[in-house]
Amino acid sequence: MSYPEYTHEKSRALFERAKKVIPSGVYGHLGPAEGLFIPVSKWPMFSERAEGTYFWDVDGNKYIDYMCAYGPNVMGYNDPDVDAAALAQLKKGNCTSSPGSIMVDCAELLVDTVASADWVYFAKNGNDTTQIAAMTARAYTHRKKIIFFKGYYHGISPWQAKKDYNGVLPEEVWNNIIVPWDDIPALQKAIEENKGEIAAIIAQPYDHGNFHDNVIMTRSFWQKVRKICDDEDIQLIIDDVRAGFRLDLAGSDHYFGFKADMICFCKALANGYNMSALCGRDHLKNAISGMNVTGSYWLSSVPFAACIANIEKMKKLNTPQLFDTLGTKLINGLKVAGKEHGFDLVASGMPSLFYLRIANDDSLYLHQEWIAECVSRGVFFASHHNHFINAALTDEDIKTTVEIAEDAFKAVKANHPELA
Ligand SMILES: Cc1ncc(COP(=O)(O)O)c(C=O)c1O
Image (cartoon, rainbow, N blue to C red; front, side, top):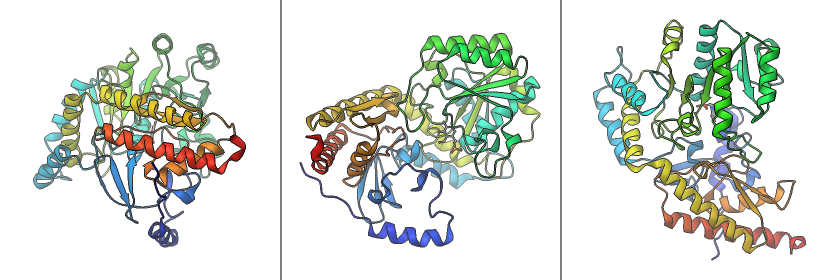
């Protein structure tokens, strides 16, 4: 089947306007510079509306969306149950002088749902939770240093930046130690060299970084890390901001068979209503209670109502299982479509968060070309970031995706006679 390419005149015109009044037009991961939209010319810049697994750009083009707003769309855009709960709460009150009683309901539900959680500290962004987790670990241990795994991203606070980043002082990252993933001897060496000084290890549940094949850790790796932390009094922080609730509704630490000391959630919590939650274990409750961290909207009630409806629905649908099934089906279809045109498509990471790479070409150009051809025909992928499955995705959507992907492979092949 042949799918015509989209055009983006209104998107481009809007971007020209945006550049005049917004730094870099659209900044951060939703923008062309950092959003991994390579080559940028094939991507829309602005959306008009969204529904279920789709969004429409300002030029009226429809996309099957595998970026899911980089994670928050877990149930489908505008999910009727989540929206109804949020709107009902909005009528009762949202940002109020005393928090709504629903905050306690939401915390109780999270403590019941997340295996390692004894308490919940609410905030707004993923970065808030990783920031508060590091502060809590430092307050509890009275130590400064933090171990990260290579290629980490835990947010935008200066302490978690790299030292050559604009606006970051060398002393803000002095206490960071970076070790490779899945290398217990290197981790032990780093701890030995900084004996009694390490407050925490912070890590995603597996290596789901950008620009490289994603690598899933073994249960045995995590058991060893847990034991090292116990032996050395190091707090183990799991950053589940991106993967949270897509592997296991009880937390990704539960999926890998261990208990984090603190676990950070954000993206999949409330289907796009803005909230995040740091969950932690009892021994840290006193330390976090004594800290001065809050925000204007952190205790607003509408997201709590959305979160409760969303978590209950994720449990009803068993979304981790559903995402695994849908993701596996999609990956298999894409690989077959690639093979038909001589492309070796490699998928890595969890099927619910699959990462793609065409392995025919080390330069990644072919891969970028294929992804762009998919996007300009209605399948919203990103070149070097993991993708996301949501609960509104159907088998019919997967069939259409594979057809478009096949058409895109055909277009790339036609541009590269040298591959024949
Ligand atoms: C693994 C991980 N940690 C932390 C963050 C930061 O979350 P936020 O952008 O909500 O502050 C992100 C965001 O993409 C993330 O993917």
